[in-house]
Each structure stands twice: as C-alpha cells, then as structure tokens.
Amino acid sequence: MTKLKLKKNDRVMVTAGKDKGKIGKILKISSDKTRVIVEKVNMIKRHTRPSRTGKGGIVEKEGPIHISNVSIICGKCAEVSRVGKKILEDGSSVRVCRKCSEFLDS
Image (cartoon, rainbow, N blue to C red):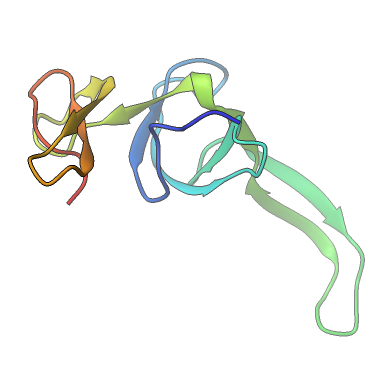
C-alpha cells in the first residue's frame, strides 16, 4: 500500500477522462487506495430492486476515478498544484502546496 497525498474533503480537479476540468470534493477514498469518489463527477446509473425499506428504480450516483486522474486545488492560490511535505520543528509533517508553499492542512 502506498501513502496518499490526497485526503477526504480535499477540493480536486479531474485532469483526464470524460469529466476533465470538473471540480469537486473527495467524498471517499477506496480501500485499495487507487481510486477516489469525487462529488458530482463520473455520474453512473444503477438499477436497484425494491426492498422493504425503500423503493427501487434507477439511482444516479458517483463512480470511482483513478487517483492519478485528479489533482488537488490549493485553497490560497486557487490553482491546481502538486503536494509536497514539510516537517515542522515539533517533528510533525504537513502537506504543502508546491506553487505557493502554503499549508494544505488546517
């Protein structure tokens, strides 16, 4: 397993595929750590059966996107950038925007 530079609730832009250029928030990172689900991006239709608790029908939901096809958007410079790491004096590490050197973690 690889260490990811993206986290849940990060704003990302899709850089490849049919939804290229769309911006959304990461809702979920899959357990195999290679795919993410982004809000309102890669919408797919699922046909569901009626159950005791709910109705059936066609449900539209977000599909997974490979993690290499999304890039993080910096909150300060509002541009797509890469993520770096910086180690603080107390020994903890934080994520840093490569363009403006601002912290991505709050």
